[in-house]
Each structure stands twice: as C-alpha cells, then as structure tokens.
Amino acid sequence: MPKKDGKEAYEAISCIRPGVKALFMSGYSEDIIHKRGILQDGLNFIAKPVAPNTLLKKIREALDQKPE
Image 1 (tube, rainbow, N blue to C red):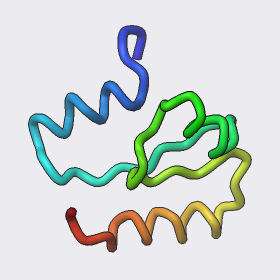
Image 2 (image 1 turned 30 degrees about the horizontal axis):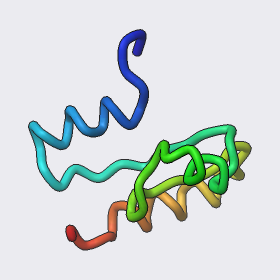
Image 3 (image 1 turned 180 degrees about the vertical axis):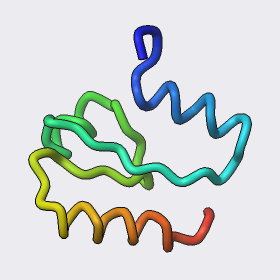
C-alpha cells in the first residue's frame, strides 16, 4: 500500500463497511504502538513474531467480538 498504512486502510474500509473486523500486526511492541498513537484502544493487535496457534486464537477472538 504505497499511499496508506494499515490504520488508514482500515479507516477507509470502515467508512464503506462500518463494523468491519480487523487484526493489526506489527514488529513493534504493543507499548510502542500505543505510545506513538498508531492504534487506538479497542482495536485488535498482535506483535510479530507470533506462533501459528497464537495467531489463530487472536483471529478467533477478533471474529467473536461483539460490535461496539
């Protein structure tokens, strides 16, 4: 995505389809992500590297979340 980062893409998609579910992934730790204000609270995030079972569990949690 040469002109958008993941958060910007999510925001654009959310305008088209409110309530869409997403899981953000980064090599940065969750602390750094929140300190820099990259993601807001309430969004699903997982840090790399991640074990396959952990990733599957996090995806399931994101899909099972009730819309706010």
